[in-house]
Image (cartoon, rainbow, N blue to C red; front, side):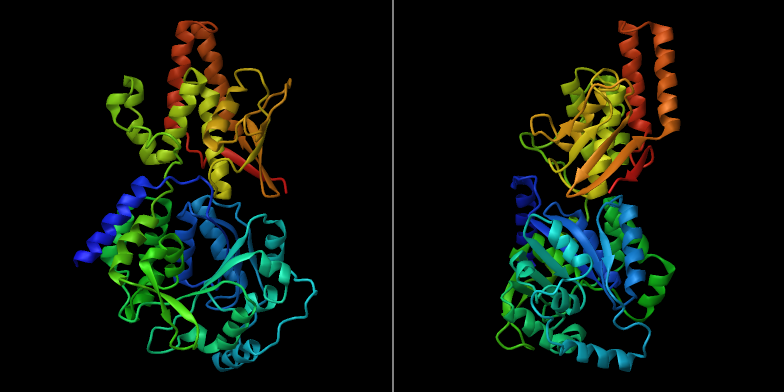
Length: 480
Protein backbone atom coordinates (compact mmCIF):
# COMPACT_ATOMS: atom_id res chain seq x y z
CA UNK A 1 0.00 0.00 0.00
CA UNK A 2 2.90 2.36 0.64
CA UNK A 3 3.61 2.95 -3.05
CA UNK A 4 -0.03 3.94 -3.64
CA UNK A 5 0.27 6.79 -1.16
CA UNK A 6 3.55 7.85 -2.72
CA UNK A 7 1.85 8.16 -6.10
CA UNK A 8 -1.04 10.10 -4.58
CA UNK A 9 1.40 12.39 -2.80
CA UNK A 10 3.29 13.10 -6.00
CA UNK A 11 -0.02 13.78 -7.71
CA UNK A 12 -0.95 16.51 -5.25
CA UNK A 13 2.53 18.01 -5.43
CA UNK A 14 2.28 18.22 -9.21
CA UNK A 15 -1.18 19.78 -9.01
CA UNK A 16 0.13 22.50 -6.75
CA UNK A 17 3.33 23.31 -8.60
CA UNK A 18 2.57 22.77 -12.30
CA UNK A 19 2.39 26.07 -14.16
CA UNK A 20 -0.15 25.48 -16.88
CA UNK A 21 0.33 27.45 -20.08
CA UNK A 22 -3.37 28.26 -20.27
CA UNK A 23 -3.65 26.48 -23.63
CA UNK A 24 -4.88 22.96 -24.13
CA UNK A 25 -2.26 20.28 -24.71
CA UNK A 26 -4.56 18.10 -26.83
CA UNK A 27 -7.08 19.14 -29.49
CA UNK A 28 -9.30 16.12 -29.56
CA UNK A 29 -12.04 14.50 -31.59
CA UNK A 30 -13.84 11.93 -29.46
CA UNK A 31 -15.55 9.02 -31.16
CA UNK A 32 -18.22 7.27 -29.10
CA UNK A 33 -20.77 4.50 -29.53
CA UNK A 34 -22.89 5.68 -26.62
CA UNK A 35 -21.88 3.36 -23.78
CA UNK A 36 -22.21 4.55 -20.19
CA UNK A 37 -18.45 4.27 -19.70
CA UNK A 38 -18.07 6.46 -22.81
CA UNK A 39 -20.14 9.19 -21.16
CA UNK A 40 -17.94 9.00 -18.10
CA UNK A 41 -14.80 9.18 -20.25
CA UNK A 42 -16.14 12.15 -22.21
CA UNK A 43 -16.95 13.92 -18.94
CA UNK A 44 -13.39 13.48 -17.68
CA UNK A 45 -12.03 14.85 -20.96
CA UNK A 46 -14.37 17.85 -20.81
CA UNK A 47 -13.26 18.57 -17.25
CA UNK A 48 -9.56 18.47 -18.17
CA UNK A 49 -7.74 21.72 -18.91
CA UNK A 50 -5.28 19.60 -20.89
CA UNK A 51 -7.88 18.70 -23.53
CA UNK A 52 -9.85 20.93 -25.88
CA UNK A 53 -12.66 18.80 -27.28
CA UNK A 54 -13.10 20.06 -30.85
CA UNK A 55 -15.81 17.58 -31.80
CA UNK A 56 -17.67 14.46 -30.69
CA UNK A 57 -18.46 11.89 -33.38
CA UNK A 58 -21.18 9.33 -32.67
CA UNK A 59 -21.10 5.93 -34.36
CA UNK A 60 -23.09 2.73 -34.20
CA UNK A 61 -22.63 0.36 -31.30
CA UNK A 62 -24.39 0.32 -27.96
CA UNK A 63 -27.03 2.70 -29.34
CA UNK A 64 -27.87 4.04 -32.76
CA UNK A 65 -25.70 6.98 -33.89
CA UNK A 66 -28.71 9.31 -33.75
CA UNK A 67 -29.61 8.31 -30.20
CA UNK A 68 -26.01 8.59 -29.05
CA UNK A 69 -25.77 12.07 -30.60
CA UNK A 70 -28.94 13.11 -28.75
CA UNK A 71 -27.59 11.79 -25.46
CA UNK A 72 -24.26 13.54 -25.98
CA UNK A 73 -25.97 16.84 -26.81
CA UNK A 74 -28.14 16.52 -23.71
CA UNK A 75 -25.06 15.91 -21.59
CA UNK A 76 -23.23 18.88 -23.12
CA UNK A 77 -26.26 21.07 -22.49
CA UNK A 78 -26.30 20.02 -18.84
CA UNK A 79 -22.62 20.93 -18.59
CA UNK A 80 -23.30 24.24 -20.46
CA UNK A 81 -20.85 23.21 -23.23
CA UNK A 82 -23.39 23.50 -26.05
CA UNK A 83 -20.84 24.97 -28.45
CA UNK A 84 -18.91 21.71 -28.90
CA UNK A 85 -19.80 20.25 -32.33
CA UNK A 86 -21.55 16.86 -32.34
CA UNK A 87 -22.00 14.70 -35.43
CA UNK A 88 -22.89 11.11 -36.23
CA UNK A 89 -22.13 8.56 -38.90
CA UNK A 90 -24.24 6.02 -40.74
CA UNK A 91 -26.03 3.30 -38.81
CA UNK A 92 -23.75 0.45 -39.88
CA UNK A 93 -25.59 -2.16 -37.86
CA UNK A 94 -29.11 -0.78 -37.66
CA UNK A 95 -31.48 -3.23 -35.94
CA UNK A 96 -30.25 -6.53 -37.34
CA UNK A 97 -30.02 -9.62 -35.13
CA UNK A 98 -26.74 -9.91 -33.26
CA UNK A 99 -25.38 -12.77 -35.41
CA UNK A 100 -25.79 -10.67 -38.57
CA UNK A 101 -24.31 -7.69 -36.80
CA UNK A 102 -21.25 -9.74 -35.92
CA UNK A 103 -20.90 -10.96 -39.50
CA UNK A 104 -21.19 -7.45 -40.89
CA UNK A 105 -18.58 -6.24 -38.43
CA UNK A 106 -16.14 -8.89 -39.62
CA UNK A 107 -16.86 -8.19 -43.29
CA UNK A 108 -16.47 -4.49 -42.69
CA UNK A 109 -13.14 -5.03 -40.95
CA UNK A 110 -11.76 -6.71 -44.07
CA UNK A 111 -12.67 -3.84 -46.38
CA UNK A 112 -9.86 -2.07 -48.19
CA UNK A 113 -9.47 1.69 -47.62
CA UNK A 114 -11.05 4.08 -50.06
CA UNK A 115 -8.89 5.35 -52.88
CA UNK A 116 -6.56 8.23 -52.16
CA UNK A 117 -7.95 11.55 -53.28
CA UNK A 118 -11.60 10.71 -52.76
CA UNK A 119 -13.37 13.33 -50.72
CA UNK A 120 -14.17 12.31 -47.16
CA UNK A 121 -17.82 13.12 -46.44
CA UNK A 122 -19.26 14.44 -43.27
CA UNK A 123 -18.37 15.46 -39.79
CA UNK A 124 -14.81 14.23 -39.29
CA UNK A 125 -13.48 15.96 -42.40
CA UNK A 126 -15.17 19.22 -41.43
CA UNK A 127 -13.37 19.19 -38.07
CA UNK A 128 -10.02 18.37 -39.69
CA UNK A 129 -10.54 21.13 -42.25
CA UNK A 130 -11.17 23.91 -39.73
CA UNK A 131 -8.79 22.89 -36.94
CA UNK A 132 -5.38 24.61 -37.04
CA UNK A 133 -3.65 22.42 -34.46
CA UNK A 134 -2.58 18.78 -34.63
CA UNK A 135 -5.47 16.51 -33.71
CA UNK A 136 -5.69 13.72 -31.15
CA UNK A 137 -8.35 11.21 -32.22
CA UNK A 138 -9.78 9.48 -29.15
CA UNK A 139 -11.64 6.33 -30.11
CA UNK A 140 -14.01 4.93 -27.48
CA UNK A 141 -15.61 2.39 -29.80
CA UNK A 142 -14.73 0.54 -32.98
CA UNK A 143 -12.09 1.51 -35.54
CA UNK A 144 -14.51 1.74 -38.47
CA UNK A 145 -14.65 5.50 -38.87
CA UNK A 146 -10.88 5.80 -38.58
CA UNK A 147 -10.38 3.29 -41.40
CA UNK A 148 -12.95 4.78 -43.76
CA UNK A 149 -12.68 8.48 -42.99
CA UNK A 150 -9.12 9.05 -41.87
CA UNK A 151 -6.53 6.47 -42.94
CA UNK A 152 -7.01 6.79 -46.73
CA UNK A 153 -6.14 10.49 -46.71
CA UNK A 154 -2.55 11.61 -46.26
CA UNK A 155 -3.44 15.21 -45.37
CA UNK A 156 -5.60 14.00 -42.49
CA UNK A 157 -3.00 11.51 -41.29
CA UNK A 158 -0.36 14.25 -41.31
CA UNK A 159 -2.65 16.42 -39.21
CA UNK A 160 -3.18 13.61 -36.68
CA UNK A 161 -0.90 13.82 -33.67
CA UNK A 162 -2.08 10.46 -32.32
CA UNK A 163 -4.93 7.98 -32.28
CA UNK A 164 -5.74 6.70 -28.80
CA UNK A 165 -7.91 3.57 -28.60
CA UNK A 166 -9.23 1.34 -25.83
CA UNK A 167 -8.72 -2.18 -27.14
CA UNK A 168 -9.98 -4.18 -24.14
CA UNK A 169 -7.45 -7.01 -24.21
CA UNK A 170 -6.80 -8.03 -20.61
CA UNK A 171 -4.17 -10.75 -20.88
CA UNK A 172 -6.75 -13.52 -20.93
CA UNK A 173 -8.82 -12.73 -24.02
CA UNK A 174 -8.85 -10.19 -26.82
CA UNK A 175 -11.98 -8.32 -25.80
CA UNK A 176 -14.94 -7.60 -28.05
CA UNK A 177 -13.58 -4.63 -29.99
CA UNK A 178 -10.24 -6.27 -30.69
CA UNK A 179 -11.82 -9.61 -31.66
CA UNK A 180 -13.76 -7.86 -34.40
CA UNK A 181 -11.19 -5.34 -35.59
CA UNK A 182 -7.73 -6.92 -35.60
CA UNK A 183 -7.38 -6.31 -39.33
CA UNK A 184 -8.37 -2.68 -38.88
CA UNK A 185 -5.82 -2.33 -36.11
CA UNK A 186 -3.08 -3.49 -38.47
CA UNK A 187 -4.28 -1.11 -41.22
CA UNK A 188 -4.05 1.83 -38.85
CA UNK A 189 -0.60 0.77 -37.71
CA UNK A 190 0.55 0.44 -41.33
CA UNK A 191 -0.71 3.97 -42.08
CA UNK A 192 2.20 5.35 -40.07
CA UNK A 193 0.16 7.33 -37.57
CA UNK A 194 1.05 7.31 -33.88
CA UNK A 195 -1.40 4.62 -32.73
CA UNK A 196 -1.63 4.28 -28.94
CA UNK A 197 -3.58 1.37 -27.51
CA UNK A 198 -4.79 1.45 -23.91
CA UNK A 199 -5.75 -1.75 -22.13
CA UNK A 200 -6.82 -2.66 -18.61
CA UNK A 201 -4.43 -4.17 -16.11
CA UNK A 202 -3.99 -7.93 -16.09
CA UNK A 203 -5.43 -8.04 -12.57
CA UNK A 204 -8.92 -6.91 -11.59
CA UNK A 205 -9.74 -3.31 -12.39
CA UNK A 206 -11.28 -1.08 -9.70
CA UNK A 207 -15.04 -1.14 -9.43
CA UNK A 208 -17.02 2.09 -9.29
CA UNK A 209 -19.22 1.18 -6.34
CA UNK A 210 -21.62 3.20 -4.22
CA UNK A 211 -18.80 4.34 -1.94
CA UNK A 212 -16.96 5.77 -4.96
CA UNK A 213 -20.01 7.66 -6.18
CA UNK A 214 -20.68 9.02 -2.71
CA UNK A 215 -17.19 10.52 -2.76
CA UNK A 216 -17.85 11.83 -6.26
CA UNK A 217 -21.10 13.53 -5.26
CA UNK A 218 -19.28 15.33 -2.44
CA UNK A 219 -16.97 16.99 -5.00
CA UNK A 220 -19.94 19.11 -6.16
CA UNK A 221 -18.71 19.77 -9.69
CA UNK A 222 -21.05 19.71 -12.67
CA UNK A 223 -19.34 16.54 -13.89
CA UNK A 224 -19.38 14.57 -10.63
CA UNK A 225 -22.97 15.53 -9.83
CA UNK A 226 -24.35 14.46 -13.22
CA UNK A 227 -22.41 11.19 -13.30
CA UNK A 228 -23.49 10.41 -9.72
CA UNK A 229 -27.09 11.11 -10.69
CA UNK A 230 -26.81 8.76 -13.68
CA UNK A 231 -25.28 6.05 -11.48
CA UNK A 232 -28.18 6.35 -9.04
CA UNK A 233 -30.87 6.36 -11.73
CA UNK A 234 -33.38 3.52 -11.76
CA UNK A 235 -32.26 2.30 -15.21
CA UNK A 236 -28.61 2.02 -14.25
CA UNK A 237 -29.42 0.45 -10.88
CA UNK A 238 -31.41 -2.20 -12.73
CA UNK A 239 -28.48 -2.92 -15.05
CA UNK A 240 -26.11 -3.21 -12.10
CA UNK A 241 -28.11 -6.08 -10.63
CA UNK A 242 -26.21 -8.39 -12.97
CA UNK A 243 -22.80 -6.80 -12.59
CA UNK A 244 -20.94 -3.71 -11.46
CA UNK A 245 -19.37 -0.67 -13.03
CA UNK A 246 -15.65 -0.73 -13.70
CA UNK A 247 -13.11 1.74 -15.07
CA UNK A 248 -13.10 1.01 -18.78
CA UNK A 249 -12.95 3.66 -21.50
CA UNK A 250 -12.14 6.24 -18.84
CA UNK A 251 -8.59 4.86 -19.00
CA UNK A 252 -8.02 6.92 -22.16
CA UNK A 253 -8.82 10.17 -20.38
CA UNK A 254 -6.66 9.19 -17.41
CA UNK A 255 -3.78 8.18 -19.68
CA UNK A 256 -3.77 11.53 -21.50
CA UNK A 257 -3.75 13.44 -18.21
CA UNK A 258 -1.40 11.14 -16.25
CA UNK A 259 0.69 8.98 -18.63
CA UNK A 260 3.15 8.31 -15.81
CA UNK A 261 0.57 5.98 -14.23
CA UNK A 262 0.85 3.58 -17.21
CA UNK A 263 3.56 1.28 -18.55
CA UNK A 264 4.03 -0.21 -22.03
CA UNK A 265 3.55 -3.96 -22.39
CA UNK A 266 3.56 -6.38 -25.29
CA UNK A 267 0.14 -7.02 -26.72
CA UNK A 268 -1.00 -10.59 -26.11
CA UNK A 269 -3.41 -10.40 -29.04
CA UNK A 270 -1.46 -8.53 -31.71
CA UNK A 271 2.21 -9.61 -31.90
CA UNK A 272 4.63 -6.72 -32.23
CA UNK A 273 2.21 -4.14 -30.85
CA UNK A 274 2.36 -2.48 -27.48
CA UNK A 275 -0.44 -1.64 -25.12
CA UNK A 276 -0.31 0.75 -22.19
CA UNK A 277 -1.67 -0.64 -18.94
CA UNK A 278 -2.15 1.01 -15.55
CA UNK A 279 0.77 0.13 -13.29
CA UNK A 280 -1.34 0.21 -10.14
CA UNK A 281 -5.10 -0.06 -10.69
CA UNK A 282 -5.89 1.05 -7.14
CA UNK A 283 -4.11 4.37 -7.78
CA UNK A 284 -6.66 5.20 -10.50
CA UNK A 285 -9.46 5.91 -8.02
CA UNK A 286 -8.03 9.10 -6.43
CA UNK A 287 -6.96 10.31 -9.87
CA UNK A 288 -10.45 9.67 -11.26
CA UNK A 289 -12.03 11.69 -8.44
CA UNK A 290 -9.53 14.51 -8.91
CA UNK A 291 -10.29 14.70 -12.63
CA UNK A 292 -14.01 15.16 -12.01
CA UNK A 293 -13.43 18.49 -10.29
CA UNK A 294 -14.09 21.81 -11.99
CA UNK A 295 -11.22 23.31 -13.93
CA UNK A 296 -9.07 25.45 -11.70
CA UNK A 297 -8.80 29.17 -12.56
CA UNK A 298 -5.86 29.94 -14.80
CA UNK A 299 -3.51 31.99 -12.62
CA UNK A 300 -0.30 33.41 -14.07
CA UNK A 301 1.19 35.24 -11.07
CA UNK A 302 -0.88 34.39 -8.02
CA UNK A 303 -1.38 30.91 -6.65
CA UNK A 304 -5.03 31.80 -6.07
CA UNK A 305 -7.37 34.64 -5.19
CA UNK A 306 -7.96 34.37 -1.43
CA UNK A 307 -11.30 33.04 -0.23
CA UNK A 308 -10.57 33.84 3.42
CA UNK A 309 -12.99 36.56 4.57
CA UNK A 310 -10.23 38.28 6.56
CA UNK A 311 -8.76 39.62 3.30
CA UNK A 312 -11.89 41.51 2.27
CA UNK A 313 -14.06 44.42 3.26
CA UNK A 314 -17.13 43.51 5.28
CA UNK A 315 -19.73 43.59 2.49
CA UNK A 316 -17.49 41.47 0.25
CA UNK A 317 -16.63 39.01 3.00
CA UNK A 318 -20.33 38.32 3.52
CA UNK A 319 -20.85 37.04 -0.05
CA UNK A 320 -17.72 34.93 -0.57
CA UNK A 321 -19.21 31.58 0.44
CA UNK A 322 -22.46 31.81 -1.58
CA UNK A 323 -20.65 32.99 -4.71
CA UNK A 324 -17.93 30.33 -4.61
CA UNK A 325 -20.45 27.62 -3.76
CA UNK A 326 -22.95 28.60 -6.47
CA UNK A 327 -20.69 29.81 -9.28
CA UNK A 328 -17.24 28.39 -8.59
CA UNK A 329 -13.77 29.73 -7.97
CA UNK A 330 -13.42 30.95 -11.57
CA UNK A 331 -16.19 33.52 -11.16
CA UNK A 332 -14.80 34.63 -7.82
CA UNK A 333 -11.36 35.12 -9.37
CA UNK A 334 -12.70 37.05 -12.35
CA UNK A 335 -14.97 39.25 -10.24
CA UNK A 336 -12.26 40.26 -7.78
CA UNK A 337 -9.74 41.04 -10.53
CA UNK A 338 -12.34 42.90 -12.58
CA UNK A 339 -13.39 45.22 -9.77
CA UNK A 340 -9.81 46.04 -8.83
CA UNK A 341 -9.11 46.86 -12.48
CA UNK A 342 -12.38 48.73 -12.97
CA UNK A 343 -11.87 51.03 -10.01
CA UNK A 344 -15.22 50.38 -8.36
CA UNK A 345 -17.77 47.61 -7.94
CA UNK A 346 -20.03 48.16 -10.92
CA UNK A 347 -23.23 46.66 -12.23
CA UNK A 348 -22.33 46.21 -15.89
CA UNK A 349 -18.81 45.07 -15.04
CA UNK A 350 -20.09 42.04 -13.10
CA UNK A 351 -22.56 41.24 -15.88
CA UNK A 352 -19.58 41.29 -18.26
CA UNK A 353 -17.74 38.83 -16.00
CA UNK A 354 -20.68 36.46 -16.02
CA UNK A 355 -21.20 36.83 -19.79
CA UNK A 356 -17.55 36.13 -20.58
CA UNK A 357 -17.48 33.04 -18.38
CA UNK A 358 -20.69 31.80 -19.98
CA UNK A 359 -19.10 32.15 -23.42
CA UNK A 360 -16.03 30.19 -22.31
CA UNK A 361 -18.23 27.45 -20.88
CA UNK A 362 -20.29 27.34 -24.06
CA UNK A 363 -17.20 26.45 -26.08
CA UNK A 364 -15.49 24.78 -23.07
CA UNK A 365 -12.22 26.67 -23.51
CA UNK A 366 -9.64 28.52 -21.46
CA UNK A 367 -8.36 32.09 -21.56
CA UNK A 368 -7.23 34.01 -24.66
CA UNK A 369 -9.18 31.85 -27.14
CA UNK A 370 -12.21 34.00 -27.97
CA UNK A 371 -12.62 36.99 -30.26
CA UNK A 372 -15.26 39.38 -28.88
CA UNK A 373 -17.29 41.99 -30.74
CA UNK A 374 -18.88 43.96 -27.90
CA UNK A 375 -22.17 45.76 -28.52
CA UNK A 376 -21.87 47.83 -25.33
CA UNK A 377 -20.17 50.80 -26.97
CA UNK A 378 -17.50 53.02 -25.44
CA UNK A 379 -19.56 55.19 -23.11
CA UNK A 380 -20.33 54.34 -19.46
CA UNK A 381 -22.27 52.75 -17.93
CA UNK A 382 -22.85 50.21 -20.74
CA UNK A 383 -19.17 50.17 -21.73
CA UNK A 384 -18.29 48.92 -18.24
CA UNK A 385 -19.40 45.55 -19.63
CA UNK A 386 -16.18 45.50 -21.65
CA UNK A 387 -13.94 45.35 -18.56
CA UNK A 388 -15.81 42.31 -17.27
CA UNK A 389 -15.56 40.64 -20.68
CA UNK A 390 -11.81 41.19 -20.89
CA UNK A 391 -10.99 39.92 -17.40
CA UNK A 392 -13.18 36.81 -17.58
CA UNK A 393 -12.00 35.71 -21.04
CA UNK A 394 -8.47 37.08 -21.33
CA UNK A 395 -9.59 38.62 -24.63
CA UNK A 396 -8.05 42.00 -23.94
CA UNK A 397 -7.36 45.06 -26.06
CA UNK A 398 -3.67 44.28 -25.76
CA UNK A 399 -4.24 40.87 -27.32
CA UNK A 400 -6.38 42.37 -30.07
CA UNK A 401 -9.19 40.00 -29.18
CA UNK A 402 -11.96 42.47 -28.36
CA UNK A 403 -13.59 45.19 -30.43
CA UNK A 404 -16.11 47.89 -29.51
CA UNK A 405 -17.25 51.02 -31.28
CA UNK A 406 -19.03 54.23 -30.33
CA UNK A 407 -22.76 53.75 -30.70
CA UNK A 408 -25.97 55.59 -29.89
CA UNK A 409 -27.75 52.31 -29.09
CA UNK A 410 -25.53 50.31 -26.73
CA UNK A 411 -26.69 46.83 -25.73
CA UNK A 412 -25.78 44.43 -22.96
CA UNK A 413 -24.61 41.85 -25.48
CA UNK A 414 -21.58 40.67 -27.40
CA UNK A 415 -20.70 38.28 -30.20
CA UNK A 416 -18.15 35.62 -29.29
CA UNK A 417 -16.22 33.82 -32.03
CA UNK A 418 -14.13 30.67 -31.78
CA UNK A 419 -12.71 28.60 -34.65
CA UNK A 420 -15.22 29.74 -37.22
CA UNK A 421 -18.25 29.57 -34.95
CA UNK A 422 -19.99 32.59 -33.45
CA UNK A 423 -22.73 33.14 -30.91
CA UNK A 424 -24.40 36.29 -29.68
CA UNK A 425 -24.95 36.36 -25.92
CA UNK A 426 -27.39 38.95 -24.59
CA UNK A 427 -28.85 39.79 -21.23
CA UNK A 428 -32.45 38.62 -21.07
CA UNK A 429 -35.01 41.41 -21.38
CA UNK A 430 -36.62 40.96 -17.92
CA UNK A 431 -33.22 41.11 -16.23
CA UNK A 432 -32.16 44.15 -18.27
CA UNK A 433 -35.47 45.89 -17.45
CA UNK A 434 -35.02 45.25 -13.73
CA UNK A 435 -31.47 46.58 -13.81
CA UNK A 436 -32.62 49.71 -15.68
CA UNK A 437 -35.36 50.30 -13.12
CA UNK A 438 -32.98 49.77 -10.20
CA UNK A 439 -30.42 52.21 -11.63
CA UNK A 440 -33.06 54.88 -12.30
CA UNK A 441 -34.34 54.51 -8.75
CA UNK A 442 -30.79 54.79 -7.48
CA UNK A 443 -30.31 58.09 -9.34
CA UNK A 444 -33.65 59.49 -8.16
CA UNK A 445 -32.89 58.70 -4.53
CA UNK A 446 -29.20 59.62 -4.42
CA UNK A 447 -28.49 61.97 -7.30
CA UNK A 448 -26.05 61.24 -10.14
CA UNK A 449 -22.44 60.31 -9.31
CA UNK A 450 -22.73 61.32 -5.65
CA UNK A 451 -21.07 59.31 -2.86
CA UNK A 452 -24.49 57.94 -1.97
CA UNK A 453 -25.03 56.95 -5.61
CA UNK A 454 -21.77 54.98 -5.74
CA UNK A 455 -22.59 53.27 -2.46
CA UNK A 456 -25.98 52.24 -3.83
CA UNK A 457 -24.46 51.02 -7.12
CA UNK A 458 -21.98 48.92 -5.14
CA UNK A 459 -24.83 47.37 -3.18
CA UNK A 460 -26.76 46.58 -6.36
CA UNK A 461 -23.72 45.08 -8.07
CA UNK A 462 -23.06 42.78 -5.13
CA UNK A 463 -26.71 41.78 -5.12
CA UNK A 464 -26.58 40.93 -8.83
CA UNK A 465 -23.30 39.06 -8.40
CA UNK A 466 -24.85 36.91 -5.70
CA UNK A 467 -28.31 36.36 -7.18
CA UNK A 468 -27.81 36.19 -10.95
CA UNK A 469 -26.77 32.77 -12.26
CA UNK A 470 -24.78 33.13 -15.48
CA UNK A 471 -26.49 30.02 -16.86
CA UNK A 472 -29.96 31.57 -16.50
CA UNK A 473 -29.72 35.30 -17.26
CA UNK A 474 -28.49 35.23 -20.88
CA UNK A 475 -29.96 34.40 -24.26
CA UNK A 476 -27.57 32.60 -26.63
CA UNK A 477 -28.17 32.74 -30.39
CA UNK A 478 -25.93 30.94 -32.89
CA UNK A 479 -24.75 33.17 -35.71
CA UNK A 480 -22.85 30.51 -37.66
